[in-house]
Length: 222
Image (cartoon, rainbow, N blue to C red):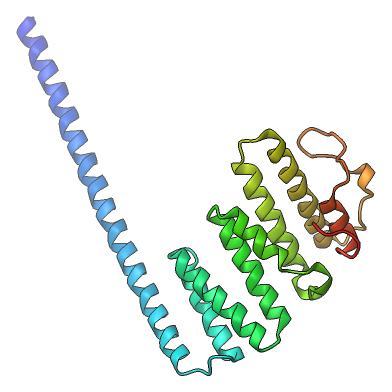
């Protein structure tokens, strides 16, 4: 009986080992394929970047064409190499200034603020946003402006350890999220005193952010 029991145990553990080795082999094959695909994707991305940079060297430095090429390079870099993405957005801000093209300047600044917020550079994001004057903002960028502010304040709130800061930036984020929702549905603004926080149904205290979102920034600046 004891011998038979030992044989059964041996066969059981042997089968488990074979099964485990088979699973490990399968995982290793999948890992190799994932690494290979990543390398192929990386090589293709770098090839596209080289091509775009090559075109940029043949383009007038302060031109719409140069701006568009830099924008394409930024988009290749933004999820791949943050420092380079920042560099090409900064180049575009300079080009737009030289062209006296405020719409393109503000567009690049909003993209830069969003990138800073996504990478944890919150003060840099706020500094860039402060350079975007709400009263000078083209109507075509209003949605991007609200979306960028909502993201920046949401990122700060989500990564803060101070309860007061969490609440303050959460409130600001909510204001711009509300403004985006109203733009999407073409609803009229809801009076501030009737607004409620979605999280705990407490009335929101009117703030500078609320005033800016409702008045278009004409009377109150953050």
